[in-house]
Length: 58
Image (cartoon, rainbow, N blue to C red; front, side, top):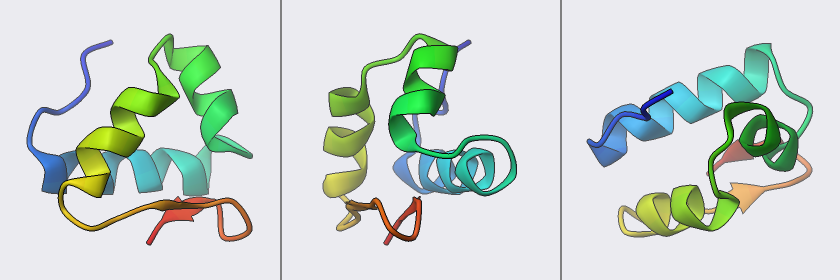
């Protein structure tokens, strides 16, 4: 699956998947065959970081 390239759309997409389908970012990445570091790097550019307790990017 190709992830959205626009960081704001990626943020919305990832947080929706985490809320609705996955218990953690690592589970999402394993299932979607994407690198956790790539998602974190893309979203950190717009000021968001993964919060494990909340299971979303804040």
